[in-house]
Length: 183
Image 1 (tube, helix red, strand yellow):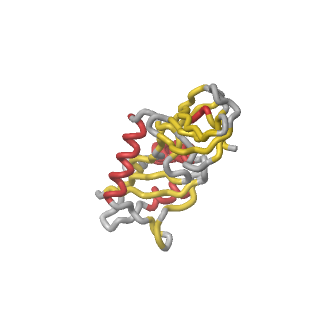
Image 2 (tube, helix red, strand yellow):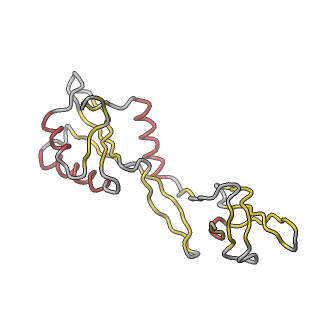
Image 3 (cartoon, one colour):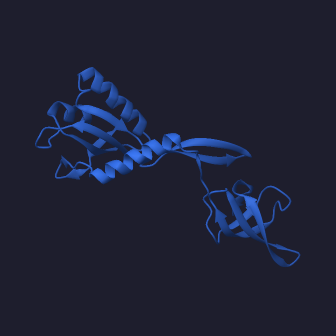
């Protein structure tokens, strides 16, 4: 029987709870051979707070759970599986047209699988929320309490170049991203 991936709209911040509930319900209802997998793709993000580095999981698609289901030859989801999924707390609806779930295309599934695998293996990415031109205040280091403007953001290294006025001259200063804050 064919397998398809579907996108399920769920309540925000309940993605993991819905995934776990679906997995439990599939076992209880004997639908493990129909509801194959429920996936919530995440990435690891590194942030600095109070001078401490924290690594957190961030959902790539907030408000969505991806399901791999066995479907009939005509592409229909089994009725028992359909109602089990729809009756799960926190579940909204399948993404589709006219109340009928639309399966994901193969290239979308490959992208999803790649993101899920990469998220588990990769070093956490650094989350820098500054853009060129932002006005910031330096909160640590020799230029503490100086105001400046972001001139460049190096996301790979976690550095920002800030233009500050020192003795009446514009001077570029390279700092770690966590040493500055938005004004």
